[in-house]
Image 1: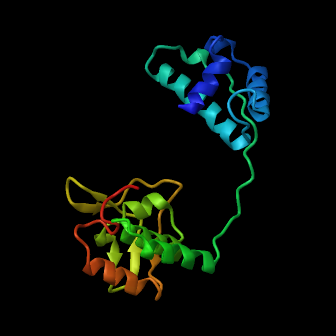
Image 2 (image 1 turned 90 degrees about the vertical axis):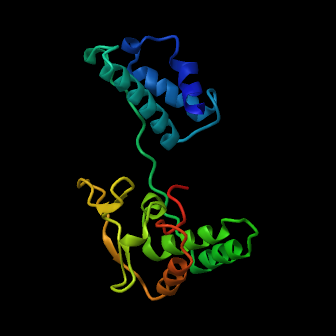
Image 3 (image 1 turned 90 degrees about the horizontal axis):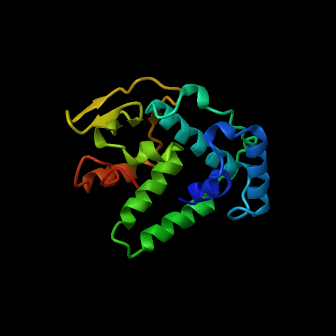
Length: 195
């Protein structure tokens, strides 16, 4: 919502065909200065202008706009990636805090932290992880398969650039997963899919 409010404030007087590189650069300058919304960096501004591109493409796909009306949307360079890694002490503190929590789903948080730490994998793959993907006998987790709720079977998705691997279960994670499986109430490792 904030993204669209910021875009609307700057671009709403223009038609799509009037948008030029200079407008995008001015939008970037004003967003960085805090003249539109809060001060923001390149990453946020790129994301917002990406939403503008997506909205225009949507209208083109719906045939409400001609494909020739798509302007060149200039975007600032990507921000350098953040290289912040949790230390073992910080991970231990997170696990301890989640174990001491009164929250009814605290066990899920603890298990998620352990999975994330010991597999170093994407959160979506872990949120959707099902027990048939976890092979406790061979100590592997097959993240390259997805659970089909209709057929109730694992399926290999179409190959993409973000291929998910089969990863080993390290000795520290094994007893955690064994305990979680013993207490599992359904097919999802974390109790349910999603956050």
